[in-house]
Amino acid sequence: MRNLENNEQKTFLISRTDGIGDVVLTLPLAGVIKSYFPAAKVIFLCRKYTKAVVECCTDIDIILDWDELFRQGDCGINTLQTNKIDVVLHIFPRKEIARVCKKAGIKTRIGTSHRLFNWLFCNHLPNFSRKNSNLHESVLNLFLLKPLASSVRNIDFENIQKYLHFRVLNKYDNYGGTSVDKNLFNLILHPKSKGSAREWGLENFKKLIGLLDKNRFRIFLCGTEEEGKDFRKYLIEDTHDNVFDLSGKLSLEEYIALINESDGLVAASTGPLHIAGALNKHAIGLFPPIRPMNPERWRPFGTNTRIFCKQTVCNKCRKSAICECMESISAKQIAEYLSGCYRL
Image (cartoon, rainbow, N blue to C red):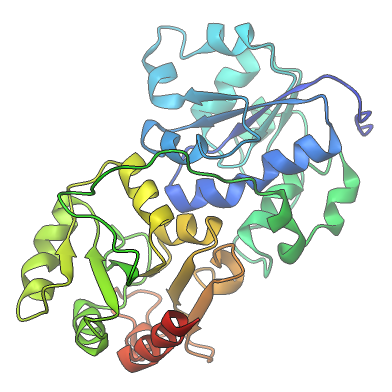
């Protein structure tokens, strides 16, 4: 397939309908498209609950909500045709979306050759494996663009970050009844992961809270209402009065704004950690060494990101929710690092 001319006016559809972190790591792709094809229009297809994240990317021209399209009688075929899409990049492959894009008459449909249904609905099939790759997720996303711009193969993880244009415009007077304190280090702790990542454990978060100076740190506990039921009593009990439970109290728009106003965030490989990295906050990521969950694949963006991961080759917990390598990361390590961030 020939490479597109840089000045061609094409409309690209990026399809990524999974989680918040996955979406954040896909956003630089829009910047790469705009860099290689300045006249291009970029549309992003996502789930309703990640729309607030996509809205922060200045390279996205139009956002389509897959939950809304799926409810339409034609599964959104008319909407896709109305937007006159030339190219679709199936970053997160879904059979129903691939089928709809073909029915909508999108001329160039690109999806990995490792999904059988893509052979039915796509006409360009780059051959690469995410599961066995040592590359970062954001770099792997570029493989879908290679049929149109072969030189994207030269973009690595360090370089791809310059294509992320992420900004937050919303600001709120308070967050769940409290607010940030500009005289302190405002720190978000996101203890749970909804099963999407290996977790550090509530006991470690409890220890971390106890090690942080209440006269220096203002701490916000965040997560969903269901997650809050698991941790709020245990983490709040016997702690100082500068710890605030915001679990279940914030919309995603409010949570993004809180991250933007805060100084740092501690979490496993979750969406909020990736938002903090995209905003260049002190994103403290807790990772296992096991592939494909390791930081080499899922490290957040940002120059202030710091990864804590046991330096070993381990497969013990591949079939277990309990991860010895995660639990071996000490709260003292994290507290000492955060204290250094406070002094900066």
